[in-house]
Image 1 (cartoon, one colour):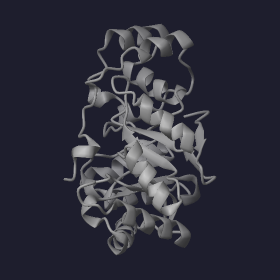
Image 2 (cartoon, helix red, strand yellow; image 1 turned 90 degrees about the horizontal axis):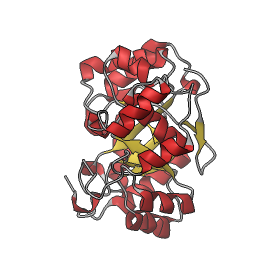
Image 3 (spheres, rainbow, N blue to C red; image 1 turned 135 degrees about the vertical axis):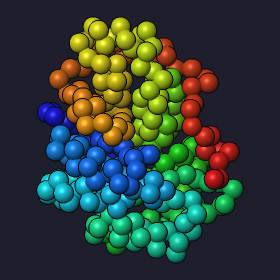
Image 4 (cartoon, one colour; image 1 turned 180 degrees about the vertical axis):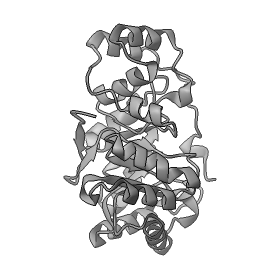
Length: 276
């Protein structure tokens, strides 16, 4: 992997723009998957407490032999641990499973608005950053009103908001809010869970650039200034997903893919209606 870009977060930290997501990666496979990715040049790994694979991720990090300071490890606070004291304890538990002294980014996984605890959880994340247990802090699946509430009540702006985002669900209004607040946008399900890969627009661009449809979609995220974390457990695909730094999409390509956005493009849950 060459010329990998980074995003400078609003707290001054540099986050790789490309990384590996490990959602639905089994615990007993995670170590091999993570080691394979790091050996292929990945430097960012995204996990979560609810994924049940933090222990395997930590094993893969250590097995890779990569210096800790070269890696950017993200994990997330699950909904049943929201609240101030609960969040502090949950982060310590995640660090224990990962076998790390700190994570580079700690996120509130969902706002879970029905619980009414995400502001207290955010206060805990601010404490975790102050203590050095999390170098950067952010949120996931937050809508503009969730963001404005935590900012108004704490004065601390999240560094990242990780949300569902792909060519059929481009989240333009939310990205405008992020830009105004200098919040980095990170895309989960960046390939639309594979449902985009036979789209005629994308397959045409893949032929044009001599790339796979997945590589074109990953490049679309990068060229739009998004952080992208495609998931795979297949070694060949892990390496192929990283082969996106030797080309760029042209303006006409981006315009064509911009037309793929549809009102019904959301695949995952609606954060306003989800408490799990």
